[in-house]
Image 1 (cartoon, chains in turn green, purple):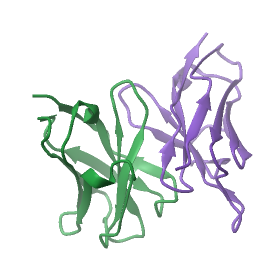
Image 2 (cartoon, one colour; image 1 turned 90 degrees about the horizontal axis):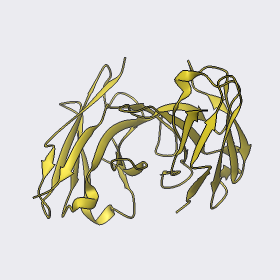
Image 3 (cartoon, helix red, strand yellow; image 1 turned 120 degrees about the vertical axis):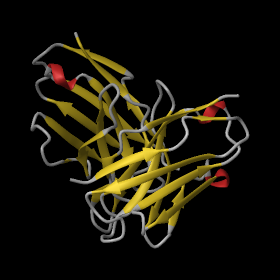
Image 4 (cartoon, one colour; image 1 turned 180 degrees about the vertical axis):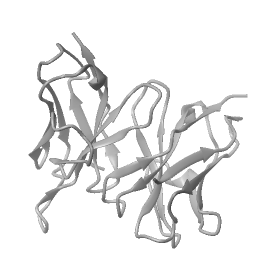
Length: 121
Length: 112
């Protein structure tokens, strides 16, 4: 059974860079034609897709966040990562890592449990 | 960007009754070359990640009870729960994956 687990600091200071890692188990991140992505959800609010990556390193980003987002992949560790720069309180959210069924233009069929990141001094 | 708008924002339905949630896209999400609607529905219970219920607008994900159904095409879509069960209390989101993935704002479903 595929499992995804987010990890990283739960508290980030304003103007700094948020960094999270998603560890995939129960399957290889590079063995099949899946895109792997990040989605966030501010407390009590809706879902926002941040971006997604293929094991080769090909990325797609939400245009509204593109200038601040970097998603990378480490196939040797079966992980992919998110960096969001110049954070503000508006970036406080539960961050989910997830898998697209195939490409970015397919539904998201596996989700991690999510990790809350709070932006505060 | 294709923006998704759901209605209503919240809904209260009696156990055993039908629940209907609507989702409208700002542009068509029907891809003419394969005649598929790039639209999914998710269920999110408190403290849990979303769960995929329906994709291609009307295809039920494996393991999803058949009381859940999706319909619609182009820009207007509906999620129907034919007979509401207590465990269906959740927030439901539609999502288009035709272009930059975008979710609706969510519809909170409660028991009346």
